[in-house]
Image 1 (spheres, helix red, strand yellow):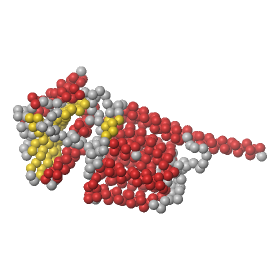
Image 2 (cartoon, rainbow, N blue to C red):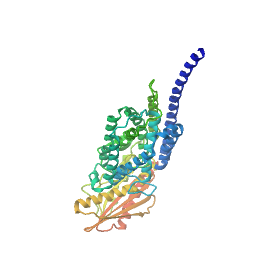
Image 3 (cartoon, helix red, strand yellow):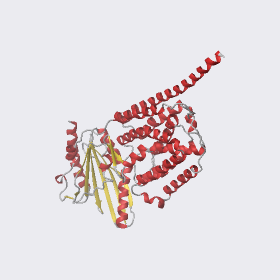
Image 4 (cartoon, rainbow, N blue to C red):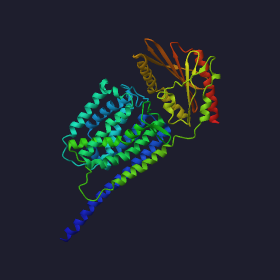
Length: 496
């Protein structure tokens, strides 16, 4: 009898040790993940790495770490669900946002209907990472009896979204404020349905959403700094964090709600499949995992500081000196009464979030063209080069082309034919590039020539617009040479 009495308390102590060991293990893993995100995020920031490299190092590596450390998590992720979810988001969100210019970005790979491989990869990885973080650290979902409404609603949502995206008459109403409308279609229904059907999972939805939103904000700032994506569309407002501006819709729907939305949707799927997490508690004291959540989120804030502010001191005076005056232009040039720049497609839209200064010259009517000039001054030459990459990207060209098409429809009731080509430019002392877009309609044609001049940490864009007559090379050479000389002087003063 004495032996039995001494073994029973020992057995209870061993069970307590197991619980404590699991909590300690998760705290250690949270610390490892935070440390990795901060260190690698800083390196990617300084190296200005590409989007795909950031996907691999900031999402694939942590995902593999969790799956290796917690084999039970692998059994909780259903790949069929992930594939369907990625397909839905790619078609309903990515494709429509690209089509209606809610977002855009350059790619190192061929695109399909404007959607690039980096975005599809990012979508798949953020879904998997959100699920893995939730299943390992926060999920306590039991195998409740499936709700009778969960499956039909999810299936209807999936197929309705695909139909809206793929049948043009059904998505024409998304042409303006696209991001806002898609976000309102995606998120509220899932959150309301979870609150009604399985309110017990709201805790894990909130915790995972809170922790992952810090990671999402860090990735957002990295993306803006490295030029992964831009926002040329219409938005309800703008958020500025650490000197980087992006739409309110991006902050609300992507940074704050995206991971929580993934977890909520998967919780409904698990209810449909009657799946219970292997880490579910059967009773006893409350877990110490909220401490892990606070550690994971709190320490991740360091990532934002490690990435730097991106702001720096402004250089308004230097930016102003880059701008051409009437004395730099051919005889007969006159200032335009109203600036013809479309804010949505203007060059400064693509780099204003990380430029120290953005300056715009008065538009001038040249003898054979209209001239529009914008200049940017940056803290480092690498940032000026990043601005050049954004201006040369497909998204910047599509913005101009789509603007031409919409204007043609409004004024003529018909679309035109668009052709574009990259031109070789040679000017002393600067790096020069150009893109020429020609827009032809039955009533005439319009040609725009975007010339980009780069010297150190200063950049200027010369936009020539001519109608029914080509821009003379002599005009271009005179104006571009004057702009290059001004750029040289400004760059020398900045270096000094």
